[in-house]
Amino acid sequence: MIFYLTLIFGCQLAGELLKVGLGLPVPGPVIGMVLLFAGLVIKQGIPDDLAKVGDAFLTNLSLLFVPAGVGVMLHITLIGQQALAITVALIGSTLATIAVTALVMRAMTRNNGNTGMEPTDG
Amino acid sequence: MGEGLRDVWVYLSASPLLALTLTLAAYQMGNWIYLKGGRNPLLNPVLIAVVVLVSILLATGTDYATYFEGAQFVHFLLGAATVSLALPLYRQIERVRKSALAITVSLLIGSLTAVASAVALAWGLGASKEILVSLAPKSVTAPVAMGIAEQLGGLPSLTAVLVILTGITGAALGPVLLNIIGVKDMAARGLAIGTASHGIGTARAFQVSDVAGAFAGLAMGLNALATAILLPLLWNWLF
Image 1 (cartoon, each protein chain N blue to C red):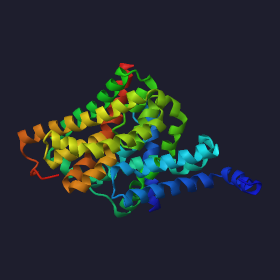
Image 2 (spheres, rainbow over the protein chains, first blue to last red; image 1 turned 120 degrees about the vertical axis):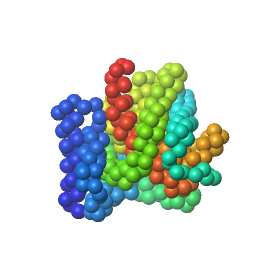
Image 3 (cartoon, rainbow over the protein chains, first blue to last red; image 1 turned 90 degrees about the vertical axis):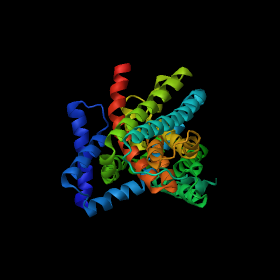
Image 4 (cartoon, chains in turn brown, cyan; image 1 turned 45 degrees about the vertical axis):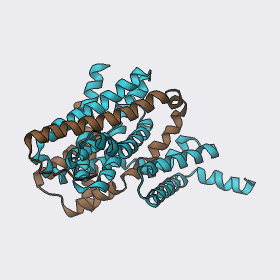
């Protein structure tokens, strides 16, 4: 278990080093995720103990951004001043993204006809 | 508060233990309300926890820096959790292989729509640059979105809250919108909800069907990657 915990932190550290060393514009942990993903592709599978450690982080993922979310109290005035722009952008953009992605995906899979997914209710 | 009680409060608030315990307790409470409410996306546990904690801090006159001294132990694990997102992504690898072109094209167009429409709408309504950059990665899963916002000079804490609100919006309105535009294919529905509203949308998609849920989870992972690479490049080119 400790080995895989070390591996995960090692990927994150390597990601941070690559980011600084190569001046990449991508967050360090995302580079770490790509490194771990590449490792899994090479290994062609997820070791059981790695799944235990990784899934422990992922099961509680939403807890982990509570402390940052509380920081919103520092910006309450700023948000209040621009509340209309934020609300319209958030709702409008979310709906636009869902519609565009779904329509493109449907158009592409209809042409290919190879997803094998039957239409269902819901 | 009596003198004795005040002394206890002063003592406790100086130690990281109180903030850490409060964070866990508030999240537990949020999660309990969410489960009692039949997993209604509007009762998001993170949003409830944030509202409860902000209310407590404001009521007791505690500043955020003091709170964060304790809460940082939870916050620190975000990086490791982001690295772990490689696992669900790898588990979906078979699905990517089957319809790689359709998924790649839909995802890239969806990812660009998410960023461009949010920035364009907010800019048109006069939002400041700080708000624009905090809003741009709103469709990406929180740990990655916060990393992107921080990198580009936004406010990561604002991004965290916007990400959650985006997730709630997509989970609550997404299925209705998809019915209106008549997309019935579960792969397309899942991909769309996962691209627009990350983990919260994915949880909602799994309630509808396993296929939709799997595609939503895949879209969440791929969109995090696509936005993390494309948004900083696009942003530095534009500004």
